[in-house]
Length: 387
Image 1 (cartoon, one colour):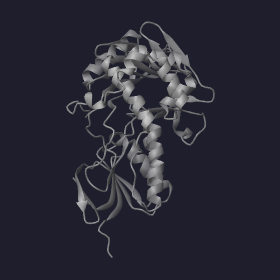
Image 2 (cartoon, one colour):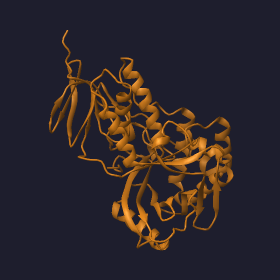
Image 3 (cartoon, one colour):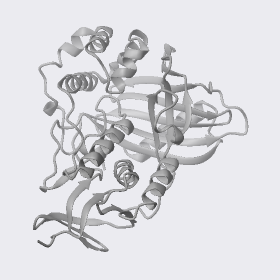
Image 4 (cartoon, one colour):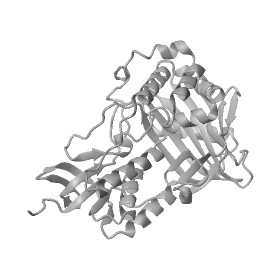
């Protein structure tokens, strides 16, 4: 019986999730025909991905820099610098990730990427799907949609950052990442500076705000400029810029509206609600999804959050939204009172019951108890969406 599809799989979006899946299928020498459709015409160094791992692991070849310790610091001077023996906080440069994935895809005769292609519609067609683009149409058996989606959220992590190069040594410890420094909270939410020292004279510096609404780029750029000026770095050379708006605490069930389409990436549940970390979650999904496809089964989306992690994140985010002026104090309590190995496990999706108990014990009881019976629908607003 003739097939109704001209390719097996179309991946919409060639960002972190789309490239991760395509590269794994290319590595596996898949017999499936796979096409990645990406709207951008080329890749630039526009992302930074970080995570905790031992020094040697399957992604070590992509790591540009790592740090043995990490710091939380309030605007009032309260500081907590932590480390976990055997773990390092590690940074992958966007351009290195893109180049690696594209090179792996280029070795495959059945996996390809087409850039500069914009998708207009995806709809059912026979026993497959029809994908209409500005450069033609495809009729795949399956579609994995990794494109960003407009969805409501409880909070938004909004940031603007630069990689800078200075003529003189920078005032940072080369083996210490500043995860949340200069933390200050007000009625609008938490603001802090994220610092990744790369060399004695270069660093990535980001200004971040937690907000109940997506903040405009101009406002974030002004905040970043103020940070650089306060550190005496306003005249440093800017190597590159990055920025974005990360939706935190989305609706619990996110599914595609077209049968046969699987959602993945940031629009499909990759982002950890309470932390903003997504890279390792995407890698785990890509490995699972590629294995399913290689076994002849349909692609899968990100797994649902376990109940305990989902509820912990919900309560934490709702408490932040209810009392934004207390957010800095909450994070400083976590950093100072929770043993670092427990906090890292929580941030890395590996928390135990004991870890949750210690985290709860470190925070003020009443503001968090007040959020237990409340639901996120009280805070989700459909008009507050990220672009």
